Each structure stands twice: as C-alpha cells, then as structure tokens.
Length: 402
Image (cartoon, rainbow, N blue to C red; front, top):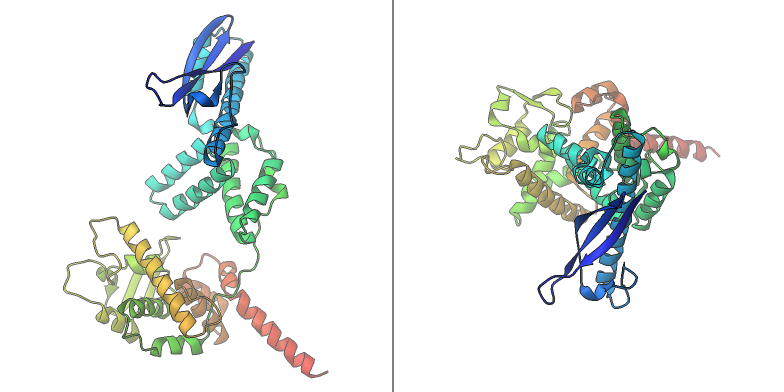
C-alpha cells in the first residue's frame, strides 16, 4: 500500500510562511514532494499534524480551508496514480509515483483541460469562444474555491450544487444555462478524447433557454432617437450614430462595424464577412450610411471606415471592446432620457431592424438572409416578442366581442 502524509517545513526566516510537503512511502521507501501551499508556523499543529484554524480571521480561514481541500484532492491523485500503476502489473517504485504525479497529463483534470481548450480557441482566432469558455471556467472555479478535480470525480450532485450556487447569485435561467451548456460541451469533448465515460451528468440541471425579454424598439422610437439633439455631448452623439449605422445596415453587429475597412466599400456596395459565422454579406450603400461615415471621417491613414479602432498596430480587440462598453453606457442613458420601454444597447438595433421588417410584412426568409443568420430558427428568436404582440392584439379583438 501507499502512504501519503502531510508535513510542515518552517521557514528559516523569522515571521515568514513555511511550506507544506508530502511524504510518500511505498515498500518502505520514502520520498518527498514540496507543494506551493504556504502557512504560518502558528497554523500548524505539530502534535496532530494538521492545520489550525482557531486563530484565523475570515480571509485566512477561507485560505486555509482551500488548502485543506487541495490537500485532500492531491491525496486522491496519489492514490489514483498508485492504483493505476498497480493494475498495470508492471514493477514501479516510489519515484515512479512521484514522477507520475508531477508530470501527469494536464488533460486529466477539468481546469487544465479547459485552459488548454481556451488557449487553443484563442490561437485559432476564435476569441469570443475563448472568452465564453474562460468565463465558464472562472465561474466554476469560484464555486470550487479554486480546487481542481478529475473528470471522473464529476457527478450530477456536483452539478446540482453548482446550479444552486449560480441561483444564489440571482443569475437568470439563461445565464445559468449559458454556463451549464459550455461545461457540458467540455465534458462531451473529454468523452470523445477518452478521458471519461459518458454518465449523462447534465440530465438534472437546466441547459435549455427561456424566452428573453423584448429587445426591440419601435420605428417611432427609432425616429425619435434619430432626431434627438445630442450636440451637447460628442460621446452620446457618437453612440447614437453608431446605433443608427447598425440599424441602417440591417442590424450589423458592433464587432463587424468596428472591423469595417474603407476597402470594403466599393461603389454602392458594402461587402463584409461576419466575425461570428464567417458568412459574406453585401449591403446596398445608402445616403444615410454615408452621412455617418462623412461625419466621423478624418485625415488619418487608418484603414477602418469608422473611428472605433484608432490604432491598427495596437490591441484592436481591446480597443473595440472599450468603445463598445462606452457606447452601451451612453445608449442606456439616452434610452432613459427618451423613456424607452427597455434598456437601449447596440444589440437593440439588430432586434429592432428584424422586428420592424417583420411588422412591414417582409418574409422571415428575407430577414434571415439580410441579417446573415444560419437558419430561420435563429431569426425566429429575434421575432419572438413581436409574434407575442401580434397574438395579444388578436386576443384583445376577441375579448372585445364578448
């Protein structure tokens, strides 16, 4: 059998934290493995060989609790490595156990596996996907207090506990589903890679979606927004104009607007490729679009059509994200000034174009193609609130007959 004991090595410097290390013994041969867990001398009970919590304040208590969880997890790792080596029917030593622990393939643990996926997405240019998985990892890591785990240690009870954790933070069902679906995608890929067997862990947690609240504003509100005098604030005026540019261009997403280049406009046709899907779209160039471009044109040699990315040699992704945040903040304030029924954001321009087009009798197939959707079912999501309004209007007509 294998023996794994936790030991404490005080620092040679007075007042400095010491290190915890493991003493691994197999067939009476001991070896040591130093961890990066640091504790104070007063936090170690030399008689019991355990950490002491009695004098710890709350932040320190939380830290020590996390260390204990990590120690328990490390012990399980040692035991699992020992069991695997034992079942191989090959001769091995204590050094082999320690070496396996130290050099163990990173894909075996959830956090490291996800980090590898995140890094791979980023290198492939799938920045948004990389960020969504990074957000999921941060959320789940917070729930776990930073303690990693093997895929085989995941079960439905753990996921239910995670779902309860997310609910306790007052997150919406769709946000909870967002995290769960990405966690499920990671788990399914680990199944494909052979790291775990499919146990259908996600059957008891919420991974579908609810209808989102209305995100579209009416044509009347679009007109009010267009005619609003914002000369007192250049920042608000720019936010309004970019919103209108998105509406004019069939609900073009902000990231696509940011990356538009002057060379994309040839004659009376604007051609661009959607960042999200890679689909190539052509838009007839109209006078209202040119007015906005003229308004913000400058003598700079920037290749971009609008001044969102101002330093092509810099971090362009960070630049457009910062501008997007500022624009949405200004739009929300403008929306409040206009007493709009919903918070005004760039995303509203896309929803509004779809809803207004539908209310004008334009077929869903045309709207879907105009927005660059992969399928009409995606467009239906944008139009869900409009269809509900049509049903409510029909219901009112029926009720009036009573």
